Length: 307
Image (cartoon, rainbow, N blue to C red; front, side, top):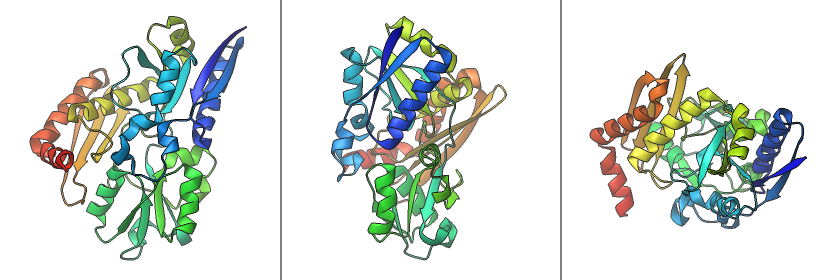
């Protein structure tokens, strides 16, 4: 019996995802032993500073990718919204599983929906993308930066004097906390982050055997959507410190991609949608990125980067 090792962060959601992938691997390969190795990342160690100020998404994957490159682990399981655009040269995403609910969820005291929150309500979120879109939709809200794993953030709703918090619906659903959700927020109000709700498995490019193990688990529709969303963000050269929404849906052989770039204060937003064949997903993402730049998104990005 051969053995493979999955590298994972130690948060409850990361471990749920790692164990889920372990079960899927063993469903497809009954003679395979799968171990999970917990790797603490910089993002897990630094909990009191906004991500945009300390290096962004890469902080949640750097140490795990080092484990892959050193051959200490064979696979890394990631929430794709946490993945940087650029991978180390010898690594790749070999498999993307079927997407869970991709939207944002509001959890509020007394189950009050977003439109009904009182003027000046305190809403917690750690995401610049969510903050900018919320300020565009409800400029009266007072937004409070929020870090930590899901359980920590849910506790802060009670302990920090907040009226509501916003989290990705997928994590709450996966951990069995759907009953905590007050409202799934429409993408018309909060366009999701690229890859939100999707889980990807990273491995070494030259490990063909490991890639073969994953082949049957790849979900084509999700993979096309992810390719388009990531291509858009790549074209915009957007990191964690720029509020970018990127969300694709498929209908038969057609893919529709919606993208937005917003200013940090929520006063300016550029948003556009394009449709093409799903086989042109990456080209579609690049094209939409160029269209947003033409509209003026580059001015927002330059302003943010210069501050």
